[in-house]
Length: 134
Image (cartoon, rainbow, N blue to C red; front, side, top):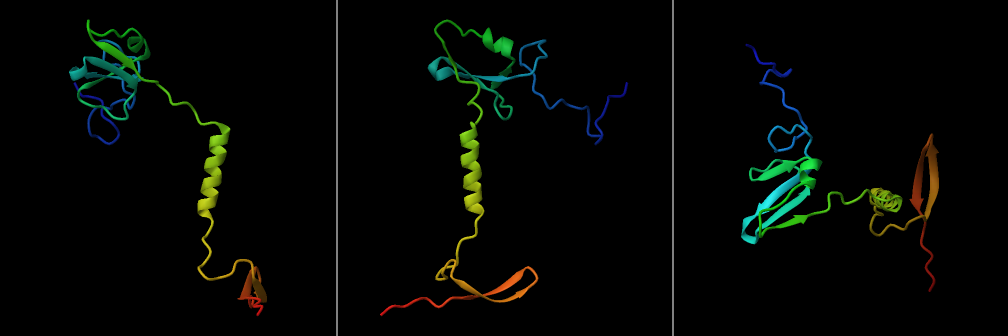
């Protein structure tokens, strides 16, 4: 029997979606369970960004039904931080625009120049003489 191989030829294809760690459950994992033995605590939080050896990925159904051993505490961390609001996105866009603006050269006056030549869309500018009152 020949195993199905990926297009790269490096072995059987693996789904990029992590599934629940519970036996015979094929639902996608959405939570990660970690045990803190020193504190007798089971911590259930959002799905970890990568698989860790002593953590368990759980689907929504198994995470909801989770119970801990007698004397242990279950800590459920919030699953989502929430989506950014329109104000947050606008503030981020403004910050990016501000950071993209070129910094003025040190010692050069801003907006005080005289056009001395033009070729197409290019202009030749000369710094204006500062007004010095004595």
